[in-house]
Length: 334
Length: 292
Ligand SMILES: Nc1ncnc2c1ncn2[C@@H]1O[C@H](COP(=O)(O)OP(=O)(O)OP(=O)(O)O)[C@@H](O)[C@H]1O
Ligand SMILES: [Mg+2]
Figure 1 (cartoon, rainbow over the protein chains, first blue to last red):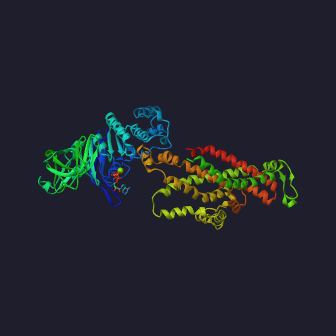
Figure 2: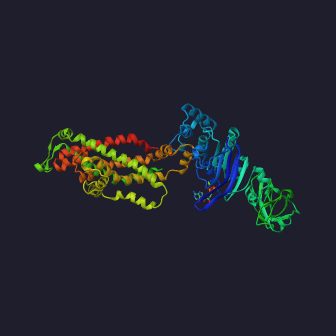
Figure 3: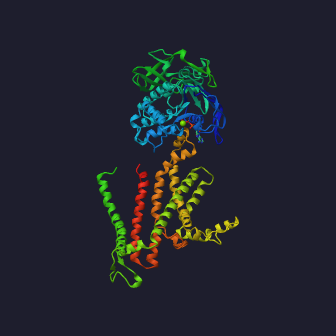
């Protein structure tokens, strides 16, 4: 229970239109991730779904019922904020119980559900503490606990992990994925983080200036980006985009090759250049290649520890099957 | 936070101020205590040079048994309580109103703060002659406009009138402190409560009010200190008549009008005791808000 449908939704702040007409269907039980550059309207879109912002024109339907003029409290959605937004004067127990108290559930039921959520999220030992006495990760779990006790139709997350350190982020990412598998509830998740998007999503929605550039499964987006924006945005490090004669040879305005789809060879490669910075990650090495005559810089992945130094000449062979071609408008040529 | 060295330096630097303050407090306190145990009537020729007659607790029992004492304590408490209630309730409402984005915000804020800059004597005079005068006051005109009989405010509703005047003066203070507190409330908390199903009144009760608890405590404590010694407003408007005689005012009458310094000093000691009782009660009720 939690299908969300946006129909021709627009949003303007004053005279500036942040979201041009936008259609989107989020299926029941789906884990949808919004990604896009900063300021592209991800948070705004999430807040429109939540009802925290009024939409300027268009319709929102939740489970097939019009929700456009329904107040946030009645939409049956739960939100987890980037700043956690816990109530500082209430204990963890009271924080988690708050939505249930507002829904006027009876005491026994509230206690049961709060303790259930606390044991799922490993918060049982902290129930009587105040949010100020918890670590960042624990606060995040309280915020999630407060969201799950209501058994909402869908969860909305706005960059919930961006205040956590890298190790904790990996842990929480797994916990949220775990939670989604278990609850099978619709989740809408906003993030900046490539890895979060690729690993968690059933469906990724790539936004640019309020426009949906492409939506699809992580692998669809990785394998066949619809345009140069998505090609450049999905994947880390970024895809190499090459224009000019080399692209024209392939009957395209722009061609794109991912760093992992270029092989380093001893000699006689199709492209040559000199090695710039080398980023050694142990398992892989990323080389920045200059003076190829193709683009300002190419990024290439070599597997393992390759002993090439700054300034060395390098020979490269792109895998022909993995080259993406785009026309002058930046659209994919298939 | 502080190291040992910085703490001992701080103590040394603070000593002169502490000694000065102690002297400032102790000298009048000890003199009041001394006078309260003596017969000191300057008009009858008593003076410190000639030595004062020691009368023990006579002044205390006389002050306590005077028919004006208990009513004055009651008046004091009603006045302080009334002003606190009005300023805190209206202060919270005004602060929330001023926090809304609106046209001419800057000007409105300055206007709201303005009464605080008016001297108590002046504001009392203005209220007495311009607003509450039964013949020419604005209220009288208003009442007549609606065909009602003008009210002689300062005689027939004297205590509530004085409470109104004092509240008008202290409302800006309460509003200002509460406004800064409201502005520090994280808007995401309100949005979270909105998502959690709390409608406007519930959001106010469960989120805004607890957030304001500390500021309200500060407003109550500071105002109480000043309100226990209200004087000018009563002196200018009713002169202590019509049930507006507070303990402070009663002491003033004993010392200045009846020129009985011994009796007035005993009243002063009672006032100190009353202030401490009020302080203990307040700290019990609201003081825990200051810990967290
Ligand atoms: N209340 C507002 N008033 C005016 N403009 C706003 C308001 N909120 C957001 N905007 C504008 O809308 C655009 C989208 O903002 P939004 O917060 O949705 O971006 P975002 O994609 O979440 O960015 P980030 O990744 O940095 O969080 C921005 O250009 C922003 O300046
Ligand atoms: Mg955002």
